[in-house]
Amino acid sequence: MSLKLFRSTGYSTMLMPGEARLAPRPARAVVAVSAWIALACNVGLWRSAVQLDALSLALALAQSLALAGGVAALLFVLCWRRTLKPAGSLLLVLAAASAASTWLHRLPSRLLPAGPEQVFPGWAALLDWRVGTLLLVLGLLPALALWHTPLRRLTGPAQFKANLSGMAAAGALVASGLLLAWVLGR
Image (cartoon, rainbow, N blue to C red; front, side, top):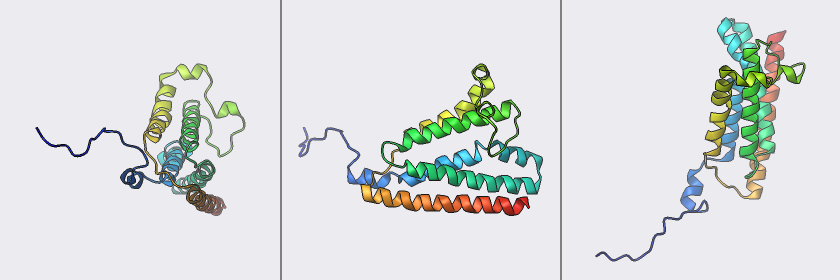
């Protein structure tokens, strides 16, 4: 029989100091989601990479830079404890549905489509195994990874300061991507 000085219940909270320091900051989740949407769900980037044309690839990368900045700016607006994961998941699923529609209907990959029928697949197309696979790989699996990632809790003023600096950085990313696309498109 051993002597137990302290009783352990096995219960731990998020507010324990070790766990709060080990969890990544919410800005890392914003960067990961916006990079995934700008790189993996960007059909125009993949089409220009397959064409092996240096100018179209550079233009697609500039547009990806602007897209990543725009998504990051939107997510930094919603980068609070209760809104980040639902907003990130919604954007991931919408980007996956848009990519699936663009790939399978062989639509032109433009930055601003003409209407919603060119962005999202129709209900009948959801029964196709290719749409389901693209939605699973590009949208649902990253959304599940986002939900299962513990994020560091910041105080209100610290989170507000991080959100403002993140929005400023995202705005600079959008401006540099659009400027680069304008220079390359001339």
